[in-house]
Length: 451
Image (cartoon, rainbow, N blue to C red; front, side):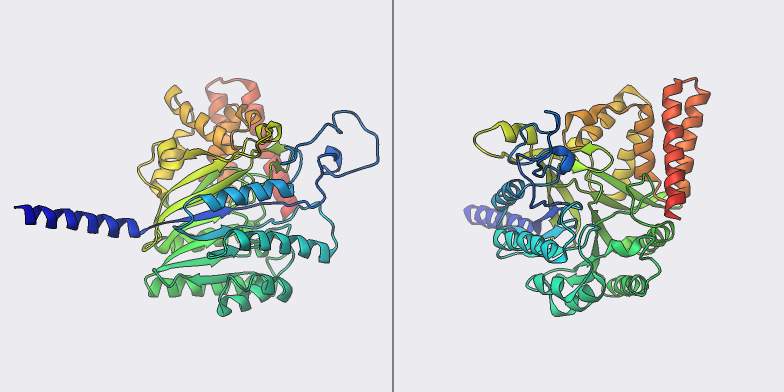
C-alpha cells in the first residue's frame, strides 16, 4: 500500500514537472522613442530639450528624471524598465519581442546619430538579456533596412534571417525546441509611400510562402510587427490596399496563427479579425515605454510579459506592467514598476482566443450598466492608468468598439455611422451624435489624404 502511494506521488510530481516544463514567458516591449537630448531642464515645447528661449513657467517647469508626459523617453526611464525586466521570470523567459520606434521621431536627422542611438539601445538589451534572443522589428521612426543595421542585430538572428532583414527589414525564426515560428514583418512596407515598391511586393510573396510552408510543416506562427491592421484614426500606417490584403491573408491562414503582436498606438488595446462574422484571429497591441502619444495623448510607460505554451505557442495569459510616471519622478527611491493587471483575471476571460476577445468586445458596447464596468476597465488600461484617459463618453466608447471589431476601412465607417444613427433614433443627446459624426468626418478626411 505504501509502495503504491509512493508510486502515485512520484507520478503526480512527474506529471506536474512535465506540465510546468511546457510553460514559458516572453516579453513584448515597444515604442521606446528614446531621446538622447531629453533633459529635466528642457522645454516641453521643444520635446523636453534644453533651450535658451524664455517662455512661460508652464513650459519650463521642472521635468522628471524619468521623463514627462509631454515628451519621449529619457535614458533613465529605459534603464529602469530594463532593470525591472531582468528580475521577472528570468530563468523561464524564452525571448523578447521588440516592436520598433526605437528612437524619437524628433531626434536628430543625422543618420550617424540615429544609428548610434539604436546601437546604445541594442547594447542595453544585449546586456539585460545576455542569454536570450531579442527579435527586433522596424518602426516608422527607425532607419531603413541596411547592412549596418543588420550587423548590429546579427548576434540575435540566424544567417537565413539576416539576408531578408538586410534587404527588406523582415525575417522569420524557427524555434528549434517547438513547432512555433516567429514571422517578423516590416510594416513600413504597408504604407502608401512604400506599398508599390519592389521590396513591398517581395514581402507579400515571402509572407505567403512562409505561412504556406508553416501549414505544411504543421507549425504555429506568431506574427510580429510595428503597426497593426485597422482603420480607426489618422494614426494608422497601413494603406487601404495593404490593410485589406493583410486581413485576407490572416483569414486564409488563421488556423496556424497563434498570435499577432504589435505596438505603434502607444495604447493598450486589441483587435479581432472575422471571417464571415466568425472571429478567427486576434491581435494584441502593447502600450509604449514612451509616455507621449501623438495627437495630444499621454500614457504611463508600460511593459508586457506573456505566458505561453512553449510546445504549441498558445498564448495563455499576459501581465501588464506599468510605471506611474508622476509618482516615480517624485520618489527619492527611484522608479517602481508594478503589475497593473492580468489579462484573463482582469476581464474574466475563459482563455486567450478570438472568440473570448470577441465576447469581450461585445461587452464594450455599453448597452447596460453591468457592461459599462467592462468598458471602464478597458479605458483605464488603454492609457495605462493615466487618469486623464478616463474621460470617454458614449461616442468615444462606440469608436473603440468599432476600432476593435471593424478593421476594414469601409466596415469601420459603417460601424461608426450606424452607432450615430442608433443614437439619433433613440433620442440620445446631440453632443454624442456630433462626436460620432466628427469621427466619421475625420476618418474620411484622413482616408482622402492617404489616397
